[in-house]
Length: 532
Figure (cartoon, rainbow, N blue to C red):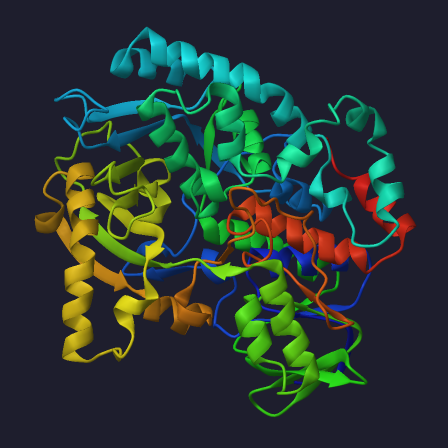
């Protein structure tokens, strides 16, 4: 490494780290983003094999294709002068168990839509007028919360007293928010549900909301902040709402962030594994890399590694103890991990109206967060043919944050025991894929199975964790999002920071960290570039 000093070092080029780096560069700050992997993107990285483009991370996107938007990632891209081309759609297919008291036999497979009225009609068909009326009432009940959740863009937030000035520019929006709602935003969504119907709601509606919470945050309604669901209701269940897919997949989003970083003078280095965060006088002052070189940070170090992996980069001593104590004090817990199935299939003879997204649930009674129970299937080549060779489809199936790390303890990659375990734990993924793609096994031309050990290896994540959780519980509210750590000069971003996993959340943390390191006047000028 030729450069020995910079203003800010960012550890990790996930969406949180790239957002921080790109916004800092746009502020005119000298920043270097160091990525251990050979490609940027972290949990959202992509790779190619045999003409297929495979994605490791998010498959549901919205709010990137048009402005104004409430998506913090859209704000980051606009602030750094970048954008992504998207294609829109509104449907996804559900494969749900029937005959269990929630759905009538024969109704377990149904097509649903985002949008203000569409899901109401789906509920009317599945559960009758009462459930449809309950959903309509819930949307009305959630409208003030959705307004409150989207009143202040995260890109206006910073972690010092200057936040009063940057938020002050949105005072007219804030004055429209009912002050009684503010504490409810950081409480569990389940509390609001009880306030709405005192646990007397339709059981399918309750199950559906738990499913949406789990997809958004890696936790059920009891562990998901109400603000996140307010954001979701505003985004998915408004008139003419749609979902989006970035042309080129998640890799295109990562490339846009990387362009925003480098065109403003920032640097991105891959294959740059950080071994240690350097401290001086108790303050983070740089990093030491695996090759023995060091890079000093004149202003700060930002870690996009998980908080547990960040702790492992600190030398044994009082600073590491203080950092771990902070994790414990915040109540941060590890989410479970993933199972992934990546395949390429021959598309000859498949229905031309194949849906891009499928949700497959094995059992309602087990709980949507139970291991091996909920599977998402994404077929992005349905809407973006460039993701697969002509006449083929690329398919990604995964269990979203529900695969226990304990299932894999003591196993080593490449051993017969590990390979057998992969086949066993991937079977639920194959069942889901076969529901989505007729004859998928016979059509399969390429197959890759990912496990928590795969996550741990490629994403450098303790136990292959999906991110953080535990801040929100019945009777316990979260704190406002913060990127500060107990160590001066060290900021933390990404999915192990409150509110946890999800593209909007990690992009928020990245821009909050970046803005906290510059003057209010610079921050204000950046906000001038964002359409709200």
